[in-house]
Image 1 (spheres, helix red, strand yellow):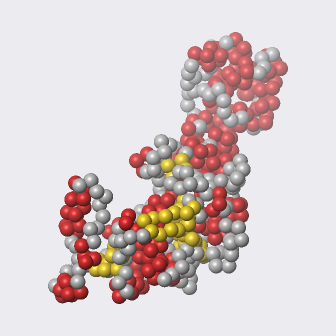
Image 2 (tube, rainbow, N blue to C red; image 1 turned 180 degrees about the vertical axis):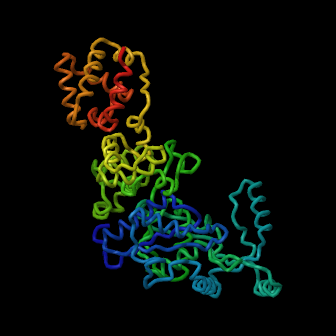
Image 3 (cartoon, rainbow, N blue to C red; image 1 turned 90 degrees about the horizontal axis):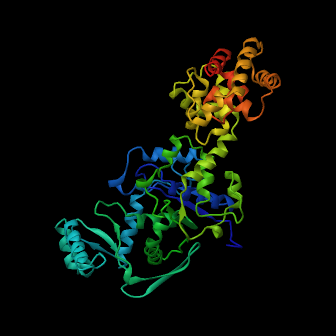
Amino acid sequence: MAGMSTENIRVRFAPSPTGFLHVGGLRTALYNVLFARKHGGSAVLRIEDTDRSRYVEGAVENLLSTLEWAGLRFDEGPEQGGASGPYVQSERSDLYRAHAEQLLAEGKAYRCFCSPDELAASRERQLAEKKDPTYDRRCRMLSEAEISEKRDAGLPFTVRMKVPLAGQLQFRDLVRGDITVHYDVIDDQVLLKSDGYPTYHLANVVDDHHMQISHVIRGEEWLPSTAKHMLLYEFFGWAPPQFAHLPLLLNQDRSKLSKRQGDVAVEDYREKGYLPEALINFVALLGWNPGDDREMFTLAELEKEFSLERVGKAGAVFDVEKLKWFNGQYLRALPAEDLVEICGPWMREAGFDTTDPARTRSVVSSLTNYLTLPSDITEHLGLFTGGPVHITGEEAQNLVADAPAQQVFTRFVELAAELEDWRGESIKAMIKAIQKDTGVKGKQLFMPLRLALTAEEHGPDLGMIAELLGRDETISRIRAQLR
């Protein structure tokens, strides 16, 4: 989109309050915000709550909280306000009804009196005949007299758009290129339901026009609806926005991302201790790429780099292991105080005493390199709590039983009992003295000590472990391996 005017760039994220925010929704929100920031435009948050049957109490509050946690800021919305409000669709009902009445008056829509039972029967009949189920347009043929009679009888009705019976429309998608849709595959979509609420299609188009949205950036699942929206813009005589439909998010087996195969709500990842920076960095790369091999981006960097030209058409695999990798990168880069605060609840839940701030900080610092999630710390806390160490594996058991290891253990117990300064650096100096005294070095020196203290072949710094265990517990674990 070279040469694009940035003066009136306006985008919107328009979720429905039907539950937690889906990770696909987070990506859509992110791309809209990035596009607005890149071009000096405005990002609008709009709540599309006209489907009252699917409305979930508290979902709006959760949505706002999740977007704030993720660091996504909107210029206009339910909380910020703005010149195009209100930003909750249920508060704009009169506007939709007025536009539906306009289409009726101009012969571009009609009243449909078919009951749910009649529509269901028609659908079953079409399926039995192996036809795609669409509305059979029976009410499109009603005379004015028949319409008046049904209205006088108090029959409920919906308002349907009157799609041309022949011809085609074309539009350009900024991700997918030129698209042609023939009218004969477009259903006479319901625009206004019998309860007076608009469907997504009417409210979406009316709001995007009145909020002066210049670009609609949304998921690929809305692509089939775009022809209906373009037709509505034509009916109203409005210039449509530009559209960009983002690729689907896929499971590892390339099926559409769904809760059946794993977590899909941002809230799920938040509760597990994923950092917002990691999740944002990860989802930014699900469909967009910077054109080189860079992977780590702050939100500010993404705002400078993002472009729709680099959004692909192919579905993007949601690789949880890659997300964990990102989280580990961000987690390990945190200041020590922040990491302690994040890991603290997990440590306490595991029964670890965090009342000594200095010791807690030392434990967390010694385990930082082993963390991809804060909950990972619970797997290593046993290193720093009392109790016997159980060495498993024949090779490891033989190593600690060998004569060189036994020499090391004996000398360690002797020197540890005399060491006045029980700190990591002093303990490491003591181990060097043991090497000099016994002549044992390398793997034969360090591996048996590590196994005796932790039952693991690899792990945090030995001096740090011994310091945190304390003199008595360290000597007890070493002495337990003497033969």
